[in-house]
Length: 275
Image (cartoon, one colour):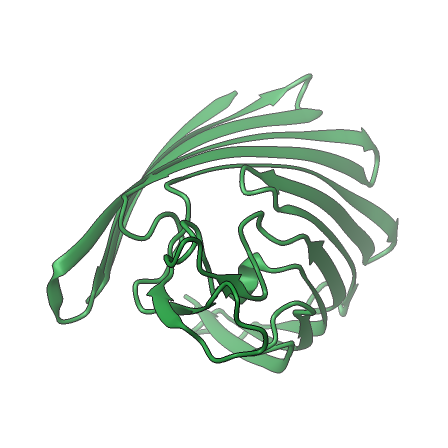
């Protein structure tokens, strides 16, 4: 049994427009003991500056996702995921650069001196990305399950990243109440062209330059708790579903002096009515 999917989305802001088209295929195999999936997405984007019609850059992105989920035993499921992406950008700012961000560049002979000039951010025109991952879901007992995963990432900018996550979920009152505790940790290296201090080359700024902290070497961790509850037998509506989430996240940027650390509390919730 196979399912073919087609999706289109449009996002528009004063300085950014993107069109995304996705084609997907999901098939059950091996007497429904395995599920294979493949999807292809193309993004057509236009980046500009608000109130500046003279500036604009076009971006074309391709992404291929592959997945395989296997039932290993009763209560044990293992999933393997892979993704490959290619982005082709314009010559003005390059891939994932901000048209509003500037980079301080020092003179070649300056030692601890003032910034010689402020140059607009400029990234390479192309970016190839790939990632592979594994996810395990294990039933531990009545109403209790364990979920864990690992993902490795690498790209043509020489960034490599590792992400691990684990969660345990427990259901109560006939699955009307669900508690989920989760944790996530990730670590990555810096882009090949990132520098803590950029210096002029022959009086000009380096060809590639960035002030994006997400392209530096960094790590982050998140720990959280999620609660979901169902109230049924109400008549109209037939059921109410409530959820709430509380999490804390830590970011560390050891090589980014303007913001070496960032922390935040994340609070969310929702209510859904079924009729």
